[in-house]
Image 1 (cartoon, rainbow, N blue to C red):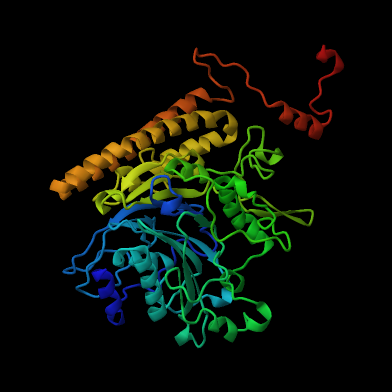
Image 2: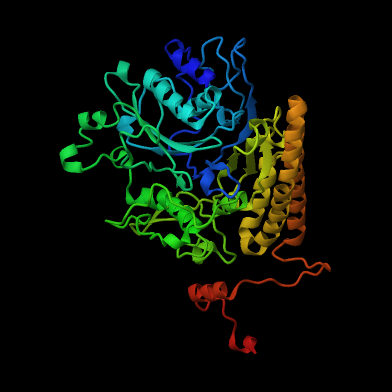
Length: 555
Protein backbone atom coordinates (compact mmCIF):
# COMPACT_ATOMS: atom_id res chain seq x y z
CA UNK A 1 0.00 0.00 0.00
CA UNK A 2 2.85 2.41 0.78
CA UNK A 3 4.30 1.88 -2.71
CA UNK A 4 0.92 2.45 -4.33
CA UNK A 5 0.25 5.63 -2.33
CA UNK A 6 3.70 6.95 -3.22
CA UNK A 7 3.07 6.42 -6.93
CA UNK A 8 -0.34 8.10 -6.78
CA UNK A 9 1.04 10.99 -4.77
CA UNK A 10 3.89 11.51 -7.22
CA UNK A 11 1.89 10.95 -10.40
CA UNK A 12 2.14 14.61 -11.35
CA UNK A 13 5.89 14.11 -11.63
CA UNK A 14 5.85 10.85 -13.58
CA UNK A 15 8.49 10.61 -16.23
CA UNK A 16 6.94 8.64 -19.08
CA UNK A 17 9.56 7.11 -21.33
CA UNK A 18 7.24 5.69 -23.96
CA UNK A 19 7.98 6.30 -27.62
CA UNK A 20 4.95 7.49 -29.56
CA UNK A 21 6.48 5.97 -32.67
CA UNK A 22 6.31 2.45 -31.24
CA UNK A 23 3.45 0.45 -32.65
CA UNK A 24 1.08 -1.53 -30.48
CA UNK A 25 2.11 -5.14 -29.96
CA UNK A 26 0.35 -6.74 -32.86
CA UNK A 27 -1.58 -4.08 -34.74
CA UNK A 28 -5.26 -3.43 -35.19
CA UNK A 29 -7.59 -6.38 -35.66
CA UNK A 30 -4.85 -8.98 -35.44
CA UNK A 31 -5.00 -9.89 -31.76
CA UNK A 32 -8.11 -11.81 -30.70
CA UNK A 33 -7.90 -13.32 -27.24
CA UNK A 34 -10.15 -14.96 -24.64
CA UNK A 35 -10.27 -14.38 -20.86
CA UNK A 36 -12.08 -16.36 -18.16
CA UNK A 37 -12.09 -14.90 -14.64
CA UNK A 38 -12.71 -17.15 -11.63
CA UNK A 39 -13.19 -15.57 -8.21
CA UNK A 40 -11.91 -17.12 -4.99
CA UNK A 41 -15.37 -18.24 -3.93
CA UNK A 42 -15.95 -19.98 -7.27
CA UNK A 43 -12.68 -21.89 -7.00
CA UNK A 44 -12.26 -25.31 -5.44
CA UNK A 45 -8.71 -24.22 -4.62
CA UNK A 46 -9.67 -20.97 -2.82
CA UNK A 47 -7.85 -19.03 -5.52
CA UNK A 48 -8.61 -16.27 -7.98
CA UNK A 49 -7.75 -17.33 -11.52
CA UNK A 50 -7.50 -15.62 -14.91
CA UNK A 51 -7.07 -17.35 -18.25
CA UNK A 52 -5.57 -15.70 -21.30
CA UNK A 53 -5.06 -16.92 -24.85
CA UNK A 54 -2.57 -14.84 -26.82
CA UNK A 55 -4.11 -15.33 -30.25
CA UNK A 56 -2.53 -13.74 -33.30
CA UNK A 57 -1.39 -15.05 -36.66
CA UNK A 58 2.41 -15.17 -36.88
CA UNK A 59 2.94 -13.98 -33.31
CA UNK A 60 5.98 -15.38 -31.53
CA UNK A 61 6.57 -14.47 -27.90
CA UNK A 62 9.18 -15.07 -25.22
CA UNK A 63 8.77 -15.11 -21.46
CA UNK A 64 10.79 -12.50 -19.61
CA UNK A 65 11.14 -11.01 -16.13
CA UNK A 66 11.25 -7.33 -15.18
CA UNK A 67 13.20 -7.12 -11.97
CA UNK A 68 11.91 -5.20 -8.96
CA UNK A 69 13.46 -1.87 -8.10
CA UNK A 70 14.16 -0.69 -4.56
CA UNK A 71 14.07 2.89 -5.75
CA UNK A 72 17.81 3.35 -6.03
CA UNK A 73 17.78 2.38 -9.71
CA UNK A 74 15.21 2.86 -12.45
CA UNK A 75 13.34 -0.31 -13.49
CA UNK A 76 14.66 -2.07 -16.57
CA UNK A 77 12.55 -2.36 -19.73
CA UNK A 78 8.78 -2.48 -20.06
CA UNK A 79 6.80 0.53 -18.94
CA UNK A 80 9.50 2.63 -17.34
CA UNK A 81 7.02 5.16 -16.05
CA UNK A 82 7.89 5.81 -12.45
CA UNK A 83 9.93 8.73 -11.15
CA UNK A 84 13.42 8.12 -9.92
CA UNK A 85 13.47 6.80 -6.38
CA UNK A 86 10.18 4.89 -6.67
CA UNK A 87 10.36 1.17 -5.80
CA UNK A 88 8.54 -1.23 -8.09
CA UNK A 89 7.44 -4.87 -8.04
CA UNK A 90 9.02 -7.70 -10.00
CA UNK A 91 6.90 -8.76 -13.00
CA UNK A 92 6.75 -11.99 -14.98
CA UNK A 93 5.59 -11.30 -18.54
CA UNK A 94 6.29 -11.76 -22.21
CA UNK A 95 7.73 -9.88 -25.15
CA UNK A 96 6.80 -10.13 -28.81
CA UNK A 97 9.49 -11.00 -31.33
CA UNK A 98 10.90 -8.00 -33.22
CA UNK A 99 8.58 -5.56 -31.44
CA UNK A 100 10.35 -2.72 -29.65
CA UNK A 101 9.10 -2.08 -26.13
CA UNK A 102 6.51 -4.81 -26.36
CA UNK A 103 6.80 -6.25 -22.85
CA UNK A 104 3.41 -7.12 -21.36
CA UNK A 105 3.10 -8.18 -17.75
CA UNK A 106 1.30 -11.30 -16.54
CA UNK A 107 1.85 -11.47 -12.75
CA UNK A 108 3.85 -9.61 -10.12
CA UNK A 109 5.45 -10.66 -6.84
CA UNK A 110 2.30 -9.78 -4.85
CA UNK A 111 0.18 -12.32 -6.77
CA UNK A 112 -1.52 -9.60 -8.84
CA UNK A 113 -2.31 -11.05 -12.29
CA UNK A 114 -3.48 -9.28 -15.43
CA UNK A 115 -4.68 -10.16 -18.95
CA UNK A 116 -6.70 -8.59 -21.77
CA UNK A 117 -8.80 -8.90 -24.89
CA UNK A 118 -9.11 -6.21 -27.56
CA UNK A 119 -12.54 -5.02 -28.73
CA UNK A 120 -11.39 -2.06 -30.84
CA UNK A 121 -14.48 0.15 -30.65
CA UNK A 122 -15.34 2.99 -33.00
CA UNK A 123 -12.50 4.15 -35.20
CA UNK A 124 -13.39 7.80 -34.69
CA UNK A 125 -12.57 7.34 -30.98
CA UNK A 126 -9.01 6.15 -31.65
CA UNK A 127 -6.53 8.70 -30.35
CA UNK A 128 -3.50 9.85 -32.32
CA UNK A 129 -1.86 11.54 -29.33
CA UNK A 130 -1.27 10.06 -25.91
CA UNK A 131 1.11 8.21 -23.64
CA UNK A 132 -0.22 4.74 -22.88
CA UNK A 133 -0.85 1.72 -25.03
CA UNK A 134 -2.43 -1.19 -23.23
CA UNK A 135 0.73 -3.37 -22.78
CA UNK A 136 2.58 -0.52 -21.06
CA UNK A 137 -0.50 0.34 -19.00
CA UNK A 138 -0.91 -3.23 -17.80
CA UNK A 139 2.79 -3.57 -17.00
CA UNK A 140 2.79 -0.29 -15.08
CA UNK A 141 -0.15 -1.55 -13.04
CA UNK A 142 1.80 -4.68 -12.04
CA UNK A 143 4.95 -2.71 -11.27
CA UNK A 144 3.11 -0.26 -9.06
CA UNK A 145 0.27 -2.12 -7.33
CA UNK A 146 0.06 -4.72 -4.57
CA UNK A 147 -3.65 -5.51 -5.04
CA UNK A 148 -6.12 -5.74 -7.91
CA UNK A 149 -7.98 -2.65 -6.71
CA UNK A 150 -4.74 -0.68 -6.57
CA UNK A 151 -3.96 -1.83 -10.12
CA UNK A 152 -7.36 -0.62 -11.35
CA UNK A 153 -7.02 2.72 -9.57
CA UNK A 154 -3.48 3.19 -10.87
CA UNK A 155 -4.48 2.46 -14.48
CA UNK A 156 -7.33 4.95 -14.18
CA UNK A 157 -5.06 7.58 -12.67
CA UNK A 158 -2.38 7.18 -15.33
CA UNK A 159 -4.66 7.32 -18.37
CA UNK A 160 -6.73 10.18 -16.93
CA UNK A 161 -3.61 12.26 -16.47
CA UNK A 162 -1.38 11.18 -19.36
CA UNK A 163 -3.72 9.90 -22.02
CA UNK A 164 -4.49 6.65 -23.78
CA UNK A 165 -3.50 5.85 -27.35
CA UNK A 166 -4.90 2.44 -28.15
CA UNK A 167 -8.06 0.58 -29.07
CA UNK A 168 -10.92 -0.56 -26.87
CA UNK A 169 -9.66 -3.04 -24.27
CA UNK A 170 -11.12 -5.28 -21.60
CA UNK A 171 -8.46 -5.88 -18.95
CA UNK A 172 -8.83 -8.64 -16.33
CA UNK A 173 -7.12 -8.06 -12.99
CA UNK A 174 -7.06 -10.26 -9.91
CA UNK A 175 -5.16 -10.73 -6.69
CA UNK A 176 -5.48 -13.38 -3.99
CA UNK A 177 -8.85 -12.06 -2.79
CA UNK A 178 -10.77 -10.40 -5.61
CA UNK A 179 -11.06 -9.93 -9.37
CA UNK A 180 -11.97 -6.96 -11.57
CA UNK A 181 -12.54 -6.08 -15.21
CA UNK A 182 -11.32 -2.68 -16.43
CA UNK A 183 -12.72 -1.52 -19.80
CA UNK A 184 -11.33 1.47 -21.67
CA UNK A 185 -11.38 3.23 -25.03
CA UNK A 186 -10.19 6.54 -26.44
CA UNK A 187 -12.22 9.70 -27.00
CA UNK A 188 -10.77 10.86 -30.31
CA UNK A 189 -10.88 14.41 -28.98
CA UNK A 190 -10.13 17.45 -31.10
CA UNK A 191 -8.07 19.57 -31.51
CA UNK A 192 -5.12 17.22 -31.93
CA UNK A 193 -3.33 18.69 -28.92
CA UNK A 194 -6.14 17.33 -26.75
CA UNK A 195 -6.40 14.04 -28.63
CA UNK A 196 -5.29 11.83 -25.76
CA UNK A 197 -8.37 11.31 -23.62
CA UNK A 198 -10.24 8.16 -22.68
CA UNK A 199 -13.32 6.81 -20.97
CA UNK A 200 -13.17 3.82 -18.67
CA UNK A 201 -15.15 1.80 -16.17
CA UNK A 202 -14.10 -1.03 -13.83
CA UNK A 203 -16.30 -3.54 -12.01
CA UNK A 204 -15.46 -6.10 -9.37
CA UNK A 205 -16.61 -9.63 -10.10
CA UNK A 206 -18.90 -10.86 -7.28
CA UNK A 207 -17.15 -13.45 -5.15
CA UNK A 208 -18.41 -16.93 -5.86
CA UNK A 209 -18.99 -16.15 -9.53
CA UNK A 210 -17.09 -16.29 -12.82
CA UNK A 211 -17.14 -14.10 -15.89
CA UNK A 212 -15.28 -13.71 -19.16
CA UNK A 213 -14.74 -11.60 -22.23
CA UNK A 214 -13.63 -12.34 -25.77
CA UNK A 215 -13.02 -9.21 -27.86
CA UNK A 216 -16.29 -7.48 -26.97
CA UNK A 217 -16.87 -5.00 -24.14
CA UNK A 218 -19.07 -6.62 -21.48
CA UNK A 219 -19.74 -4.00 -18.79
CA UNK A 220 -23.26 -2.72 -19.36
CA UNK A 221 -25.27 -0.72 -16.82
CA UNK A 222 -23.06 -0.09 -13.80
CA UNK A 223 -23.63 1.41 -10.33
CA UNK A 224 -22.39 4.98 -9.97
CA UNK A 225 -22.61 5.08 -6.18
CA UNK A 226 -20.82 1.85 -5.18
CA UNK A 227 -17.06 2.55 -5.10
CA UNK A 228 -16.42 -0.76 -3.38
CA UNK A 229 -17.50 -2.58 -6.52
CA UNK A 230 -17.34 -0.05 -9.35
CA UNK A 231 -14.95 2.71 -10.42
CA UNK A 232 -15.13 4.87 -13.55
CA UNK A 233 -13.77 7.98 -15.24
CA UNK A 234 -15.59 11.25 -14.52
CA UNK A 235 -16.36 11.73 -18.21
CA UNK A 236 -17.68 8.24 -19.00
CA UNK A 237 -21.30 9.47 -19.36
CA UNK A 238 -20.81 13.18 -20.08
CA UNK A 239 -18.53 12.51 -23.05
CA UNK A 240 -21.13 10.22 -24.64
CA UNK A 241 -23.82 12.87 -24.18
CA UNK A 242 -21.56 15.60 -25.58
CA UNK A 243 -20.80 13.55 -28.71
CA UNK A 244 -24.43 12.55 -29.27
CA UNK A 245 -23.73 8.90 -28.56
CA UNK A 246 -26.15 8.75 -25.64
CA UNK A 247 -29.43 10.56 -24.84
CA UNK A 248 -30.52 10.01 -21.22
CA UNK A 249 -34.15 10.77 -22.07
CA UNK A 250 -34.43 8.36 -24.98
CA UNK A 251 -31.85 5.65 -24.35
CA UNK A 252 -32.65 4.55 -20.79
CA UNK A 253 -29.92 3.65 -18.31
CA UNK A 254 -26.38 4.22 -19.53
CA UNK A 255 -24.65 1.02 -20.69
CA UNK A 256 -20.92 1.15 -21.35
CA UNK A 257 -20.81 -1.61 -23.97
CA UNK A 258 -23.93 -0.39 -25.77
CA UNK A 259 -22.54 3.13 -26.11
CA UNK A 260 -18.83 2.52 -26.73
CA UNK A 261 -18.72 -1.07 -27.98
CA UNK A 262 -19.64 -2.48 -31.39
CA UNK A 263 -22.08 -5.35 -31.09
CA UNK A 264 -23.17 -6.37 -34.57
CA UNK A 265 -24.23 -9.87 -35.56
CA UNK A 266 -20.75 -10.76 -36.83
CA UNK A 267 -19.12 -9.49 -33.64
CA UNK A 268 -21.42 -11.55 -31.44
CA UNK A 269 -20.94 -14.71 -33.47
CA UNK A 270 -17.15 -14.70 -33.30
CA UNK A 271 -16.78 -13.09 -29.85
CA UNK A 272 -19.79 -13.43 -27.58
CA UNK A 273 -20.24 -17.05 -28.59
CA UNK A 274 -16.98 -17.88 -26.81
CA UNK A 275 -18.39 -16.36 -23.59
CA UNK A 276 -21.59 -18.35 -24.10
CA UNK A 277 -19.58 -21.55 -24.48
CA UNK A 278 -17.62 -20.95 -21.26
CA UNK A 279 -20.83 -20.16 -19.39
CA UNK A 280 -22.82 -23.07 -20.81
CA UNK A 281 -20.13 -25.57 -19.79
CA UNK A 282 -19.49 -24.08 -16.32
CA UNK A 283 -23.20 -23.80 -15.51
CA UNK A 284 -25.28 -26.11 -17.73
CA UNK A 285 -28.14 -25.73 -15.25
CA UNK A 286 -28.69 -22.17 -16.52
CA UNK A 287 -29.54 -23.53 -19.97
CA UNK A 288 -28.34 -20.29 -21.57
CA UNK A 289 -29.69 -19.77 -25.05
CA UNK A 290 -27.26 -19.27 -27.90
CA UNK A 291 -29.61 -16.71 -29.50
CA UNK A 292 -27.75 -13.63 -28.30
CA UNK A 293 -24.42 -15.04 -29.53
CA UNK A 294 -26.09 -15.78 -32.85
CA UNK A 295 -27.20 -12.17 -33.14
CA UNK A 296 -30.91 -12.95 -32.91
CA UNK A 297 -32.80 -9.67 -32.71
CA UNK A 298 -34.23 -9.02 -29.25
CA UNK A 299 -32.33 -11.89 -27.59
CA UNK A 300 -31.38 -11.40 -23.94
CA UNK A 301 -27.69 -10.53 -23.35
CA UNK A 302 -25.71 -12.90 -21.16
CA UNK A 303 -25.29 -12.07 -17.48
CA UNK A 304 -22.31 -9.99 -16.43
CA UNK A 305 -21.24 -12.93 -14.26
CA UNK A 306 -22.62 -16.33 -13.27
CA UNK A 307 -22.28 -18.86 -10.47
CA UNK A 308 -20.82 -22.14 -11.77
CA UNK A 309 -22.68 -25.34 -10.99
CA UNK A 310 -19.69 -26.49 -8.95
CA UNK A 311 -16.50 -24.89 -7.72
CA UNK A 312 -13.78 -25.06 -10.36
CA UNK A 313 -10.37 -26.66 -10.10
CA UNK A 314 -7.42 -25.68 -12.27
CA UNK A 315 -8.14 -28.77 -14.37
CA UNK A 316 -11.76 -27.62 -14.81
CA UNK A 317 -10.59 -24.20 -15.95
CA UNK A 318 -8.13 -25.75 -18.40
CA UNK A 319 -10.98 -27.86 -19.80
CA UNK A 320 -13.14 -24.75 -20.29
CA UNK A 321 -10.34 -23.24 -22.37
CA UNK A 322 -10.25 -26.35 -24.57
CA UNK A 323 -13.35 -25.82 -26.62
CA UNK A 324 -14.52 -26.25 -30.22
CA UNK A 325 -18.21 -25.90 -29.29
CA UNK A 326 -18.06 -29.65 -28.79
CA UNK A 327 -21.39 -31.41 -28.57
CA UNK A 328 -23.41 -28.45 -29.86
CA UNK A 329 -24.87 -27.67 -33.26
CA UNK A 330 -21.76 -25.54 -33.85
CA UNK A 331 -19.31 -28.40 -33.18
CA UNK A 332 -16.34 -27.71 -35.44
CA UNK A 333 -15.40 -31.38 -35.54
CA UNK A 334 -18.53 -32.20 -37.51
CA UNK A 335 -19.67 -31.48 -41.07
CA UNK A 336 -18.06 -31.48 -44.49
CA UNK A 337 -15.92 -28.48 -43.49
CA UNK A 338 -14.26 -30.68 -40.82
CA UNK A 339 -12.98 -33.07 -43.49
CA UNK A 340 -12.91 -36.84 -43.08
CA UNK A 341 -11.06 -36.74 -39.74
CA UNK A 342 -12.94 -34.08 -37.78
CA UNK A 343 -10.48 -31.19 -38.21
CA UNK A 344 -11.87 -28.51 -35.83
CA UNK A 345 -9.94 -25.50 -37.20
CA UNK A 346 -10.94 -23.17 -40.00
CA UNK A 347 -8.44 -21.24 -42.09
CA UNK A 348 -8.80 -17.48 -42.10
CA UNK A 349 -10.58 -15.32 -43.06
CA UNK A 350 -13.56 -16.08 -40.85
CA UNK A 351 -15.89 -14.27 -43.24
CA UNK A 352 -16.24 -15.37 -46.85
CA UNK A 353 -18.58 -15.21 -49.82
CA UNK A 354 -19.88 -17.66 -52.42
CA UNK A 355 -22.10 -16.63 -55.34
CA UNK A 356 -22.77 -13.29 -53.72
CA UNK A 357 -23.93 -14.74 -50.38
CA UNK A 358 -21.93 -14.06 -47.21
CA UNK A 359 -20.93 -16.73 -44.69
CA UNK A 360 -18.81 -17.07 -41.56
CA UNK A 361 -16.88 -19.85 -39.89
CA UNK A 362 -17.29 -20.30 -36.15
CA UNK A 363 -14.50 -18.91 -33.96
CA UNK A 364 -13.85 -21.20 -30.95
CA UNK A 365 -11.71 -20.64 -27.86
CA UNK A 366 -9.22 -23.27 -29.05
CA UNK A 367 -7.63 -21.99 -32.22
CA UNK A 368 -4.56 -22.72 -34.29
CA UNK A 369 -3.12 -19.19 -34.10
CA UNK A 370 -2.70 -19.17 -30.31
CA UNK A 371 0.89 -18.32 -29.45
CA UNK A 372 0.47 -19.29 -25.80
CA UNK A 373 -2.17 -19.47 -23.09
CA UNK A 374 -2.04 -19.14 -19.32
CA UNK A 375 -4.04 -19.88 -16.19
CA UNK A 376 -2.93 -17.68 -13.31
CA UNK A 377 -3.47 -18.64 -9.68
CA UNK A 378 -3.49 -16.19 -6.76
CA UNK A 379 -4.37 -17.53 -3.30
CA UNK A 380 -4.48 -16.19 0.28
CA UNK A 381 -3.65 -19.68 1.58
CA UNK A 382 0.04 -19.27 0.71
CA UNK A 383 2.61 -16.49 1.13
CA UNK A 384 3.07 -14.36 -2.00
CA UNK A 385 6.42 -15.97 -2.72
CA UNK A 386 4.68 -19.34 -3.21
CA UNK A 387 1.10 -18.39 -4.02
CA UNK A 388 1.71 -16.67 -7.36
CA UNK A 389 1.57 -19.39 -10.01
CA UNK A 390 1.20 -19.28 -13.78
CA UNK A 391 0.17 -22.45 -15.61
CA UNK A 392 1.75 -21.91 -19.02
CA UNK A 393 1.04 -23.63 -22.34
CA UNK A 394 2.39 -23.03 -25.84
CA UNK A 395 0.21 -22.98 -28.96
CA UNK A 396 -3.35 -24.33 -29.31
CA UNK A 397 -5.06 -24.76 -25.92
CA UNK A 398 -6.55 -28.09 -26.98
CA UNK A 399 -3.21 -29.73 -27.71
CA UNK A 400 -0.93 -27.98 -25.24
CA UNK A 401 0.33 -29.02 -21.81
CA UNK A 402 0.03 -26.54 -18.93
CA UNK A 403 3.26 -26.46 -16.93
CA UNK A 404 3.83 -24.68 -13.59
CA UNK A 405 5.89 -21.47 -13.57
CA UNK A 406 6.01 -19.65 -10.23
CA UNK A 407 5.96 -15.85 -10.37
CA UNK A 408 8.75 -15.78 -7.78
CA UNK A 409 11.14 -17.31 -10.34
CA UNK A 410 14.30 -15.36 -11.03
CA UNK A 411 14.77 -17.01 -14.44
CA UNK A 412 12.33 -18.28 -17.03
CA UNK A 413 12.61 -21.85 -18.38
CA UNK A 414 15.12 -21.89 -21.28
CA UNK A 415 12.68 -23.20 -23.91
CA UNK A 416 10.31 -20.27 -23.22
CA UNK A 417 12.88 -17.67 -24.21
CA UNK A 418 14.48 -19.00 -27.39
CA UNK A 419 13.57 -19.42 -31.04
CA UNK A 420 12.10 -17.36 -33.83
CA UNK A 421 8.99 -17.47 -36.00
CA UNK A 422 11.28 -17.52 -39.06
CA UNK A 423 13.17 -20.74 -38.26
CA UNK A 424 11.98 -24.11 -36.98
CA UNK A 425 13.74 -25.14 -33.76
CA UNK A 426 12.53 -28.25 -31.92
CA UNK A 427 14.25 -27.03 -28.74
CA UNK A 428 11.96 -23.99 -28.69
CA UNK A 429 8.84 -24.71 -26.66
CA UNK A 430 6.58 -22.95 -29.14
CA UNK A 431 7.89 -24.89 -32.12
CA UNK A 432 7.66 -28.23 -30.29
CA UNK A 433 3.99 -27.83 -29.38
CA UNK A 434 3.17 -26.14 -32.66
CA UNK A 435 4.66 -29.03 -34.63
CA UNK A 436 2.66 -31.67 -32.76
CA UNK A 437 -0.58 -29.73 -33.28
CA UNK A 438 0.04 -29.12 -36.97
CA UNK A 439 1.08 -32.70 -37.63
CA UNK A 440 -2.17 -33.89 -36.04
CA UNK A 441 -4.54 -31.53 -37.86
CA UNK A 442 -4.89 -33.52 -41.14
CA UNK A 443 -5.85 -36.75 -39.26
CA UNK A 444 -7.13 -35.07 -36.13
CA UNK A 445 -9.67 -37.59 -34.89
CA UNK A 446 -7.13 -40.42 -35.15
CA UNK A 447 -4.22 -38.62 -33.53
CA UNK A 448 -5.87 -36.55 -30.81
CA UNK A 449 -6.30 -39.49 -28.38
CA UNK A 450 -2.51 -40.01 -28.35
CA UNK A 451 -1.94 -36.31 -27.65
CA UNK A 452 -4.61 -36.10 -24.95
CA UNK A 453 -3.15 -39.16 -23.20
CA UNK A 454 0.25 -37.49 -22.79
CA UNK A 455 -1.39 -34.20 -21.89
CA UNK A 456 -3.38 -35.86 -19.08
CA UNK A 457 -0.35 -37.82 -17.92
CA UNK A 458 1.75 -34.69 -17.44
CA UNK A 459 -0.90 -32.30 -16.15
CA UNK A 460 -2.13 -34.85 -13.61
CA UNK A 461 1.46 -35.38 -12.46
CA UNK A 462 2.03 -31.63 -12.02
CA UNK A 463 -1.20 -31.23 -10.07
CA UNK A 464 -0.43 -34.17 -7.79
CA UNK A 465 3.07 -32.89 -7.11
CA UNK A 466 2.06 -29.26 -6.52
CA UNK A 467 0.98 -29.48 -2.82
CA UNK A 468 4.25 -31.13 -1.79
CA UNK A 469 6.34 -28.62 -3.74
CA UNK A 470 4.50 -25.68 -2.21
CA UNK A 471 4.71 -27.14 1.31
CA UNK A 472 8.46 -27.48 0.90
CA UNK A 473 8.75 -23.95 -0.48
CA UNK A 474 6.78 -22.50 2.45
CA UNK A 475 9.01 -24.30 4.94
CA UNK A 476 12.15 -23.09 3.15
CA UNK A 477 10.84 -19.52 3.04
CA UNK A 478 10.52 -19.45 6.82
CA UNK A 479 14.26 -19.85 7.27
CA UNK A 480 15.79 -18.90 3.92
CA UNK A 481 13.53 -16.98 1.49
CA UNK A 482 16.25 -16.75 -1.16
CA UNK A 483 16.68 -20.52 -1.13
CA UNK A 484 12.89 -20.91 -1.47
CA UNK A 485 12.97 -18.68 -4.55
CA UNK A 486 15.84 -20.68 -6.02
CA UNK A 487 13.90 -23.89 -5.31
CA UNK A 488 10.76 -22.64 -7.10
CA UNK A 489 12.83 -21.29 -10.00
CA UNK A 490 14.56 -24.63 -10.50
CA UNK A 491 11.29 -26.54 -10.17
CA UNK A 492 9.57 -24.32 -12.76
CA UNK A 493 12.44 -24.73 -15.20
CA UNK A 494 12.72 -28.48 -14.65
CA UNK A 495 9.04 -29.24 -15.16
CA UNK A 496 8.63 -26.95 -18.17
CA UNK A 497 11.65 -28.56 -19.83
CA UNK A 498 10.43 -32.03 -18.84
CA UNK A 499 7.13 -31.37 -20.61
CA UNK A 500 8.83 -30.01 -23.73
CA UNK A 501 11.09 -33.06 -23.93
CA UNK A 502 8.09 -35.35 -23.48
CA UNK A 503 6.33 -33.46 -26.28
CA UNK A 504 9.35 -33.96 -28.53
CA UNK A 505 9.09 -37.68 -27.83
CA UNK A 506 5.39 -37.46 -28.66
CA UNK A 507 6.22 -35.78 -31.99
CA UNK A 508 8.57 -38.63 -32.87
CA UNK A 509 5.96 -41.22 -31.89
CA UNK A 510 3.25 -39.56 -33.99
CA UNK A 511 5.49 -39.39 -37.05
CA UNK A 512 6.30 -43.10 -36.77
CA UNK A 513 2.77 -44.24 -35.98
CA UNK A 514 0.83 -42.05 -38.44
CA UNK A 515 2.92 -42.20 -41.58
CA UNK A 516 1.95 -42.08 -45.25
CA UNK A 517 -1.76 -42.33 -44.51
CA UNK A 518 -1.43 -45.52 -42.44
CA UNK A 519 -1.62 -46.19 -38.71
CA UNK A 520 1.24 -48.43 -37.64
CA UNK A 521 0.24 -51.19 -35.22
CA UNK A 522 2.34 -52.07 -32.15
CA UNK A 523 3.62 -55.18 -33.95
CA UNK A 524 4.80 -53.12 -36.96
CA UNK A 525 1.95 -53.76 -39.39
CA UNK A 526 0.43 -51.16 -41.72
CA UNK A 527 -3.23 -52.06 -42.31
CA UNK A 528 -5.36 -49.94 -44.64
CA UNK A 529 -7.07 -47.09 -42.83
CA UNK A 530 -9.43 -45.70 -45.44
CA UNK A 531 -12.00 -43.02 -44.75
CA UNK A 532 -15.09 -42.90 -42.51
CA UNK A 533 -18.27 -44.11 -44.21
CA UNK A 534 -19.96 -40.71 -43.99
CA UNK A 535 -17.06 -39.22 -45.95
CA UNK A 536 -17.14 -41.96 -48.59
CA UNK A 537 -20.84 -41.29 -49.09
CA UNK A 538 -20.11 -37.59 -49.62
CA UNK A 539 -17.37 -38.50 -52.11
CA UNK A 540 -19.81 -40.67 -54.07
CA UNK A 541 -22.52 -38.02 -53.97
CA UNK A 542 -20.26 -35.27 -55.26
CA UNK A 543 -18.33 -37.30 -57.84
CA UNK A 544 -21.25 -39.13 -59.43
CA UNK A 545 -20.00 -41.98 -61.65
CA UNK A 546 -16.46 -40.69 -61.84
CA UNK A 547 -15.31 -43.03 -59.05
CA UNK A 548 -17.57 -45.94 -59.96
CA UNK A 549 -16.06 -49.19 -61.23
CA UNK A 550 -17.45 -51.00 -64.29
CA UNK A 551 -20.15 -53.54 -63.44
CA UNK A 552 -17.89 -56.54 -64.07
CA UNK A 553 -15.31 -55.15 -61.62
CA UNK A 554 -17.85 -54.94 -58.80
CA UNK A 555 -18.23 -58.71 -58.47
